[in-house]
Length: 109
Image 1 (cartoon, rainbow, N blue to C red):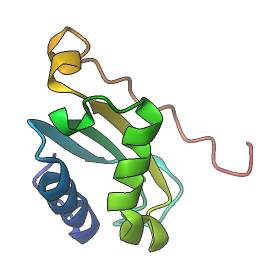
Image 2: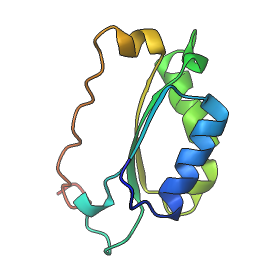
Image 3: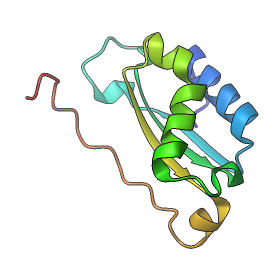
């Protein structure tokens, strides 16, 4: 996570750290890649590695994170890309996180 984090990124980091006790956490603000005003915090990618995900399907992991970040998602965060893995999954060589696609400008462009 970059040092120049805004209040939304800071809130995301605090909530995910508190609830999931991750061994690895990246909060990546991708807002600059989209058609939003400079300084907006609207598009994020999170990489969360936690054993709290053990015995959870991928869908349940995503629902858990969306629930933890409900306030942010209801108040300005437009997009949230999630990579959620256990320590075993992360340590077994699947540490690659695909880059986000280029913004298409919205409205199906």
